[in-house]
Image 1 (cartoon, helix red, strand yellow):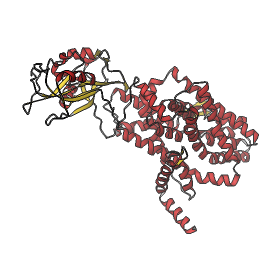
Image 2 (cartoon, rainbow, N blue to C red):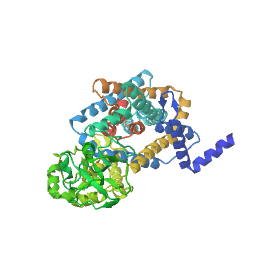
Image 3 (cartoon, rainbow, N blue to C red):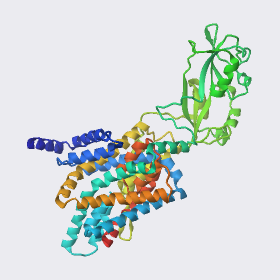
Image 4 (cartoon, rainbow, N blue to C red):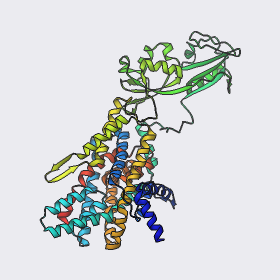
Length: 566
């Protein structure tokens, strides 16, 4: 058994990447197991497995951890940039208050525990840093201890105890935040993160039903039907619309005497012609009453219909309504085209006849391939939904974010910095917002974005578990479980108090939004990753981004305060 342990230990030391991916695989497997109605989830499962694997003495360079987290947080910021900047203003006041509540309750909890259990200033600061998973507290607390001029030996002892407190409490600090922000919050609110995330996304889409990439409406707004012409005989293709006095319908195919003929505007329909009619559901249903019998199918009537996003660049269309644009366009240009969507700054706008179109808007057109291609050349250009990532744009964004994270601003003797994570988040938000005005650049397919989020966050958590798990378990064995239990209180109690304030005083009523804000107040990145997995959209990101930025400042300030008050 000892030989096997040595073999595995040597293997992991020579290939730490093996330990990383093994922890990921085992973690996501364990995360799917149901314990009653409870699931750990992939992130928490990966952290737990990494702590177990760490007992073999694995160490992964911290550069890997920083790189993975930068990828995760930049991707999160990039996909949420437009929504984030729209949400800034007075509506962010709740997030500011929530962040302050967590910081204050965290400080009080640490100081009370320190006095109750006679903890020295070093241990108290370390427990604050680990229990609240804010590593910057260690640096500010150490600076405060050095400034007290306690003597070299006492100063060294207190500084060493910072690491002890941090090492014992950090693992549960990450794990406990997931339990509270994901599992406990859902039970407290009585609704799931997923359900409320869908509801919030639908509301942002003007109350419309949100359809995912692999979903479609059971009753589509636009339909195609095949009819044999009866009473409509004699009407031309051009004036066919006027027959019913309803929104337009389009004849896309005419089959006469067994042969498909050209669909010209002046072509007249004859009795027993078979036609393919495409248009708004209501119009097609009304036409069905008067056209003649419907046919289930007909050889030669197949038409490829597509939906394409067109970016408006034609200045002649700027600030005109759809009704005005329709009057300006020739009948040939209008033929077979239906506007099914309009986006402005990545936000859906109701595509009604009186809606104005601005340069840079994205119009979604539905129609036959040739008709859409013809209209796109007159409107602007087709926004290609490619599968390749614009690495130039993304690389520059990450470089800018990491450089932002290096900037240090001093408030007196206290250094304040975003850090690499905060810098990458801010850069992602800015670069995501900038892309709105130039959608042709910065391509970042959803699949690529999701991979960076999943791998970046889970990989980051695994590296933390591998690097600190063995030390945490060893320190608990050496110092007893008291420090661990105090750390658990520091992790859980401030979050619960903040949750109560958020629900009953600040009136958060959407579980997904509340979960994002709550995780951000603690800079709880693993918890946020699990929240995103549950939500399956970016709704929690905006409140998280606001409280995360504030937490990096508020929680960092706790270091010297704990040293002064403990």
